Image 1 (cartoon, helix red, strand yellow):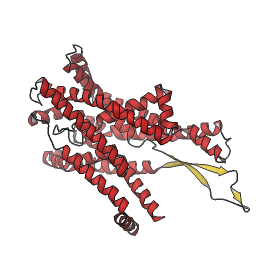
Image 2 (cartoon, rainbow, N blue to C red):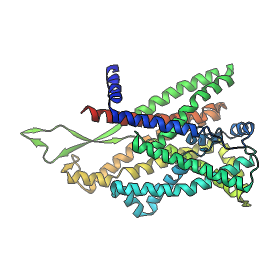
Image 3 (tube, rainbow, N blue to C red):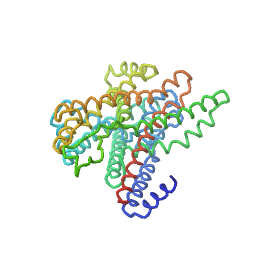
Image 4 (cartoon, rainbow, N blue to C red):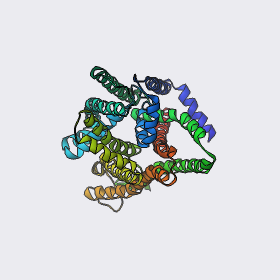
Amino acid sequence: MFENFFHKVGIILSDRALRKRILFIVLAIAIFRFASAIPVPGVNHAALAQFFGANAYLGLLSVFSGGGLNTISIVLLGVTPYITASIIMQLSTVLFPNLKEMYQEEGEVGRARFIAISRYITVPIAILQAVAFLSLLQREGILLPLSHLQLVTDVLVVAAGSIFLMWIGELITEFGIGNGVSLIIFAGIVARIPSGIAQSLFTASSANIPAYIGFVALAIAVVYAVVVVADAERSIPIAYARQVRGGSAGAPTYLPIRLLQAGVIPIIFALSLLLLPQLLISGLSALHVSAAAGWLVGYQSFSNNTWFYSAAYFILVVMFTFFYTAITFEPHRIADNLQKSGAFVPGVRPGRETEGYIGKVVNRVTLPAALFLGIVAVIPFIIKALTGVSAILVGGTALLIAVQVLLDVIRKVDAQVSLREY
């Protein structure tokens, strides 16, 4: 095991192209961390700490900002606007067949156009979210009163910071390894670990020590379960019309169906959708819409109810798991490709019957995966409701995202190493 590990590390260090990709990721993340340390002027840090202590759910937004929200930095929005734009585009594929055709049937060119439209949508969303969030911070006394010119300047700076992170993420995807946006989120989560551990140690009392030990054990169990589920797959046997050659059958072939096709995307989409209403209502309040104050009170009462909030979170995670799997995995295309290559599922006729069979298998394996993902996502909320300890609230979701992203990167690095071996 260790010999294989050191062998792969040796390949990574000796291969110039692979080494450059990894160094590019390190450089890009260093630039991101530097930007997250540049604060917006006029922050009241005491009011900021009190605000986050009163509304722990806003800490979920900090997962996407990489810690930039905790210091109200110029990248305080993180990649949230880009994720919101991606959600809008993914949902639009259901309403507009042309977008679905562009995303699924036009190959790399169509996907590049799809991503380009997401970029354009990100700009107005970043501006609107910057207005909403800065207005919310100003109303809570976290930011000093701003003139109209100062507010416009801060909005442009914060929106530009979010667009800058989107650009860095796409550069990582192109010149690095893995999904750039996911790696930015992962880097922000890892950067918060030392301060989170220190805060837990300083604030922990002797009465809470058993609870924290239980949290550590639960975290280890969650990591193990996520690794097992992420690697699990359902294999569909595939046969070929000309499989028998020279009087002997060829090696058996299988179509692997991953249990968790969507990966970490449903968690990110669900969190973004839950956090979006508060930002929109805050923006309407900044525009002095009379009904916005009542809406804000109603949403805050909903978000402060742990059971209602976690139930909505669970439902959204399950829904997005099925939705994203349906978008990215097309049984019709798989069945068509099998038929064109002379392959078939034993006992199932090619064409529509194969498409229906593959669709049923995908739905069957996606259901337990979606339920598992939803349960793991809401476990920290349930623990907080039962024990009153909120330190694990953000940590559980961040842990889930970090493990999924890390597994994805490890797979892609291993694929690059295997490519160079053979």
